[in-house]
Image (cartoon, rainbow, N blue to C red; front, side, top):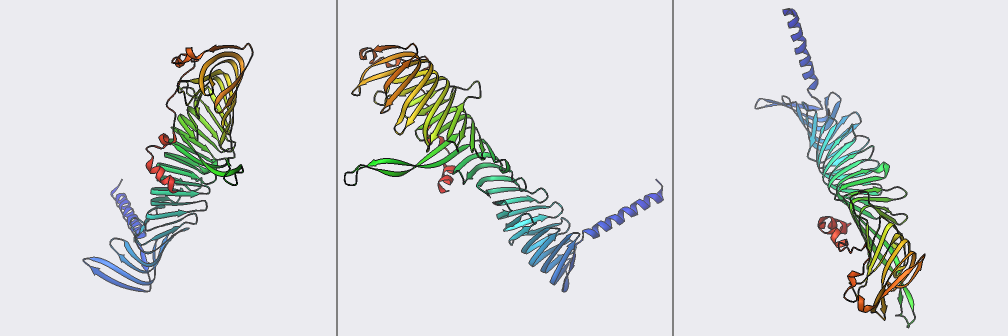
Length: 476
């Protein structure tokens, strides 16, 4: 390169730099100008109908103080900053020309025709189309309202990152968390730490420490410490003779709480309203409890399905009242929030413990099993395929031996939560053991699949260690 060409290149570079610097300098116009020079700093104070421009950024206010060398201005009174469809308003703030940034600590409002964002203070970066708002932040659009302590909003992406006491309301869903990322157009939300998602339509609350919510798919995933709580109400009728010794019935409202705890929980809020719990699942609902590998709860049809997905996992265990049940898969049907029918498929086994004689377990095993319930508990049980049973006999509640039997099918009837009659079909065989041989040897009369599990989940156990979540839950 010759010397002349080098000079020409240097001149063009310097001119372009000067042009760029001039373009970056803010311009202030207004009704009255007052110039000062303080400690070598040129200060221009403009009063009345102030207009500040820099490229496509236009700011109006009642008064402006421009610091010339710093290329910044203090904005006072009825401040309005605009860029294309974006408008920011405040009573007092600053504009930094070198950074193309506006800031205010006097209450600020942003409106970009898609969202309205307000806070006690905020910064906006015009080149990045990015807002950072703090203290009592509220973001509102056509489908949701989000509040938090601090929020960063990316205008072009329609993305908001909120931190501290975060709450977002979307139609029937309310999400609370320590931190949250929300995408405006898709309404997809990711939340972490102390997450609570509430659904107004089904009275459900789900707690966890990581949430992914996809409203357009009616789907939510909680894959860190999920806990579901659902309160259902139903009416029960109880006998009453308090009025003129006439037997009547009293209608009483009963509140029944469903609690599901697992390592992974999915919620499908479509027409079926399904909750899927996976890995170390524990369920409690009234006198019903379960430990299993995988569960599906169909709320709208009142059905719970449990089975194992992991080959290394054990069979689902079901407890209801004084009975324990295991099988490869279990389906529970409910009516009016009470168990109506229970189906067990493959390797079914049920044992019932006598509350007065805790070492005596009625036992039944078979390929498949159906248990029918009524208001007082188990009404009858149907067992099919290689049926084996042990049931204890009582004479006026006094022990009177037991019967061991086998058959192809069996129908067992219950009264007062005890076996009252057993019908055997298909090569039946029965053997009676008198009380003298049974007393003191009860645990020697067990079927091959007998296992008594003492790790029954309770609502108190599932909710233990969640004092903070439960405090919020009780306040809601």
